[in-house]
Image (tube, rainbow, N blue to C red):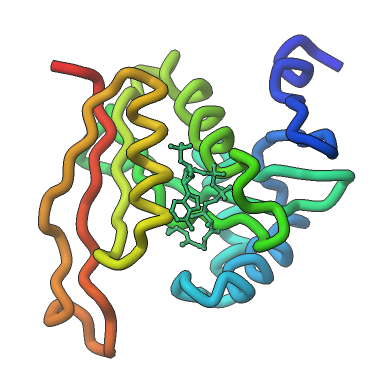
Amino acid sequence: MSPTQISATLTAAPDAVAFRKPKVSDGVRLWEIARDSKVLDLNSSYAYLLWCQDYAQTSVVAEVDGKVVGFVTGYLRPQLPDVVMVWQVAVDADQRGLGLAGKMLSQLMDRLEPRGITTLHTTISPDNTASQALFAGLAERRGMDFRREDLFSPNDFPDDHEAEDLYIVAPRR
Ligand SMILES: CC(C)(COP(=O)(O)OP(=O)(O)OC[C@H]1O[C@@H](n2cnc3c(N)ncnc32)[C@H](O)[C@@H]1OP(=O)(O)O)[C@@H](O)C(=O)NCCC(=O)NCCS
């Protein structure tokens, strides 16, 4: 095991947790976790497989006893070279509250920082307090700024969809 792999293998009682980039074979689990969250927009299974193939560098999975129990999917914003956009974050219900989501996001930022990607964007609906707490905690632990901006209103969507506010975790100015 390389030093990187060792440092990415942390312990969250009672099981060992490994954090790594997704593989195409993880696409099924990403789709299942998103489906079971009952909160996230569920995209097609095809979208998750494609994501694992093409955006693994900006995505993370958490594995407990060989099973993927959580994921972060992200991409680099084409017009903003220092920004990773986190698209979806989810953890299986029985693994929540153990810090897995926070650690996956930290792993992603640690991985991208050496490439000059130092800012994280995400969108959160106004009633998702767990997600707001997740990103606020990430910013606090890393000593970064955390702020909200308007992005998509319900009227921007063709279906019945809540607003999606932009949240920014950025180096302190
Ligand atoms: C949001 C979610 C990913 C958090 O996963 P998790 O592994 O339980 O999160 P963590 O244990 O890392 O906790 C992160 C922070 O969020 C807080 N938090 C977690 N669940 C919470 C809840 N239900 N209500 C309020 N705060 C909550 C924790 O207290 C923690 O705060 P801290 O950093 O100040 O200690 C998980 O609840 C989930 O999968 N929800 C359904 C999908 C979803 O809403 N995704 C986010 C939108 S993209």
